Length: 196
Image (cartoon, rainbow, N blue to C red; front, side, top):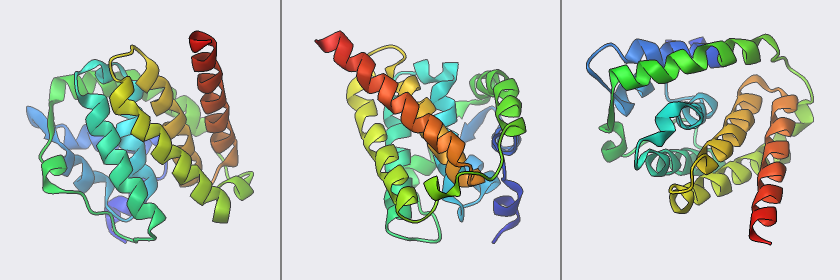
């Protein structure tokens, strides 16, 4: 396992890694992946979901790119790959570093708050068939992002659920997985209320 993979253990680690990658005028997906590593799927899922929770989600097309990113990662996790591969067209995608730093500044305090409350618990929600179910739910949420991109805040709610699932899998903390399911249930209830 490379050094980057071993270093990423929390949300704050991921925020720090993205910040480290954002040292030029623009930051590419390749730069971020070099910082977080390619052997752990949890951090790779967390990166786009965290950014979609932040104000950066308002960039046109970003939710769709985030969805493609998450779908490719989750598909590989479900297939049992031990090393993440991303197509070159995704690795070349860039964002201005100043926009990225604004998003990271916004995420820093919530990340520290969440990290302080994360611990290994309810592991039955993060292992075996429960892990597979969690990955399938993440996949379904990400597939919904492109058609919902024009609706304000909808992708951010889905991204929050994905971030909670991914954090739960990363930290083996079933409480965050459970929180992710609650966000999904509330979102489904909200959509049903709006459409009924």
